[in-house]
Length: 229
View 1 (cartoon, one colour):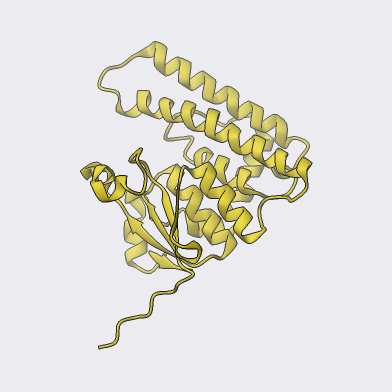
View 2 (cartoon, helix red, strand yellow):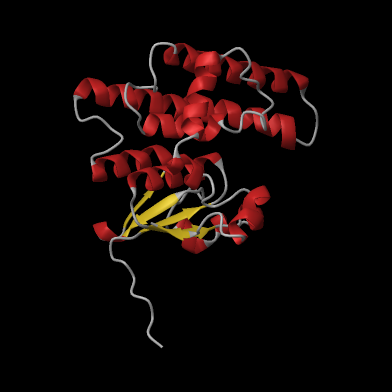
């Protein structure tokens, strides 16, 4: 039996069904790059095993290994998204002003939306005791950040002019705002943008790579593929 030939252009994506994991999957789908998904079971601690720590010393997903670039290994989603955009010349402007606009809103997600919404989820869903002050603090700050995005989107279809990795990064978190119990009510510009993001085929495919536990049955029925292009 002949073994299938490994595509030397393929990108290995080590990931799990989390907002950070979906960011990279969406970008790969939008950029039509060939990739193979390797799903880690975070509840079993796979991310702490020695083989994975050799890829990312911080034991966090996602990580990519680009076979087309001498097995270049990259962790941290901001770095991965910038690399993929620069590799393809897409989803990132080449002019200084446009590039910095995208970088600003990408870093906004990395430094603000991700940490604040992440903590809101922890104290709403997972913390072993109820800490009302902490829940209020992270809930209110996350909502304030949503309002910042809404204000930006009042005069712009996308966060930084044209559709970019900044939109992908922020939407990957915003789409699960209900899980954080932070509403988007009254933020019409934000909700318009969220609808536009959700309607993009690349986004629809990316959030199923890998699927959240509730979407696993869909994948089994052919709703998504784990090794994809």
